Image 1: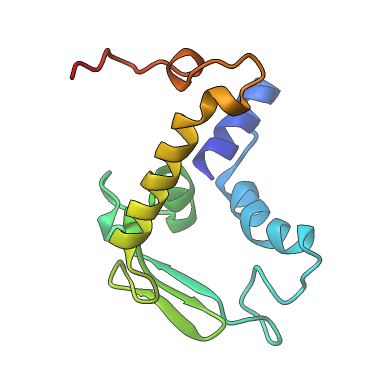
Image 2 (image 1 turned 90 degrees about the horizontal axis):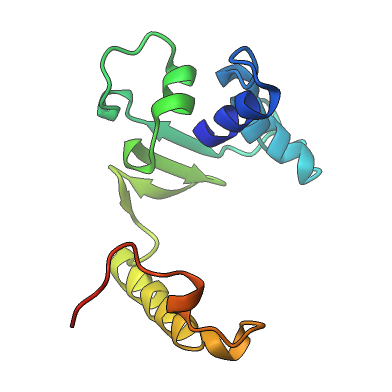
Length: 141
């Protein structure tokens, strides 16, 4: 959401656009509209009971006057305490309950390693991953 707000300001050349209100509505109600779902994106009768509880005290920039602005402009995944989707608690106390995060991250890393090793096979020029996207600093083995 922070990036969306910044890009609005950059594109329009004005700090008056991309407000936290507009960005939050786009992320919630706008996302539901894009999916053609009136039952998502808000807490209302007939809507799904999907919730994300954010620990505003976990945000590391001081006092919170406007929780939506704080979330949009300074929030991160580490601030999420609880996630409830369709009545099922998936994250509680910042910990995933329905997936082994370590195993998932290991699988994602392995998948990335395979893709990077095969870059020359799929890149239009046959370039290696180091040619396509060099490391920030040289890696010495």
